[in-house]
Length: 237
Image (cartoon, rainbow, N blue to C red; front, side, top):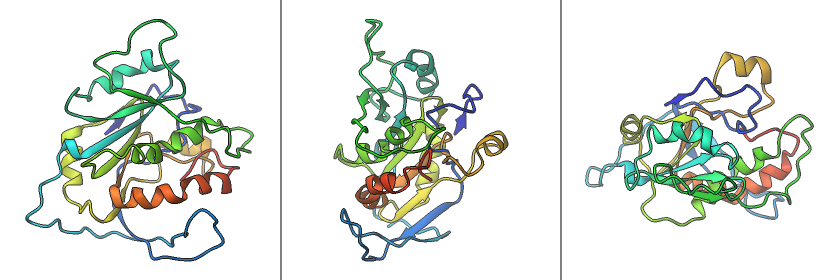
């Protein structure tokens, strides 16, 4: 995966910045709390690979659902990054926009991923004085992608509208891990420049990250609560 150098340091579409790096195997034992929405979970991470069953079909590009954070206003300028790797009728996923496109009257490009408009996030708290509320919308792409209920999805892969995925490499990496287990594949930083400017005040993910289906199923239960609970942050780590 490669993240273009065009991205500004203060790009509002950067509430996630997780680069692909050693995967985390996550086990989530139940832990009761006062959370009204769900049972919170206590996460223990370890760096262990699991072995996929020998009789199971190998993971292919058709098992991956991409969620791309984008903007209706800037898509005409940013679409070319996605179109470098997107293969119509082969890759699966959506560009998630802040509003309906088409103010220019031009049709949606057939060479671009299909789009969906993100849900309204005005109900969420947001108290970060220097950030952007778009962080909430982008952070919820995993949840909204999962709630589409599409069949035969093993992995949710998230990225920005200027993230370039090398899909063959991605499939090869994901094939090393059991998609029936809870895995997050990503890192905690993007670049020295981003670290210098933002330090620990923002999450990272511009290079992309992958979440297995079972982990996504647990994440969607608590994500909205986390957004409100940590309303002072720019994004979610």
